[in-house]
Length: 343
Image (cartoon, rainbow, N blue to C red):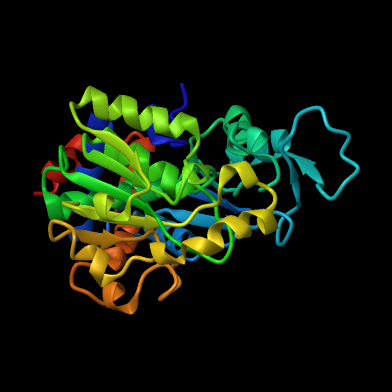
């Protein structure tokens, strides 16, 4: 059976621990040859800086090769839905794309944001599922409606500063942005923090900004399994009080999904959710992070971004290390013995 990295919901905490342990080793010893002769095709349907750079460089540092493709730009447009009469812009179907790429490369990564038209459809994550269904090599999620690579980088950062994440208070706070954004990183923030047994608090302006019930339920169940707490609040001071780690992200209100003008009428009243020094002072000397990119003095103030407690750049760097470790795992490298054999 082919092992994919589509969502951390499919991976045990122990499996993720092993990847993070190897990532820690690779951070100290970046140049390896464990994937010499291997290759990965990276399909970018949406823009990227950190994801593209870290995967290209990471594969190179492991001795392999990365091929970047942008369907609709430097590669043919792709149709992902089954049984379509292809008389639109797409020139080939994912069935052929997956088959051809699987014959060329050893892994395929895809970045495909939702269409922001119909959440009942987008929440099914059909684009990456179609690729995984027709590929005969491992498929990696470089962000769709979740962002599991970002999850690994976040948890590597949390573990570095909090050591044992279990029962530490993790605050996922909504923050302002002038337009509605993907919920992927927020969904993932809930998944990974609860997977590692943290006490998780979700702060958002009102019920319209609640995340999809699937991720709320998963976070609740995972916290419960670890004897940890999961709560949702709209009270800023209550949410920040005693937090050990603050993670900020903006996302769109799902009841207004596909209607940005109506959604803006909701969000424009909540610019005060910006992360600032006054809010951070309520925490338990918390670290602050964000997946980046971040609009300064919109999502978080200069004071926060320039503070010693801001670890956003560290999290961004950790993308490189965790993705290398994850690719080694998918290529059936003995991740448990990788560090010992080099000591």
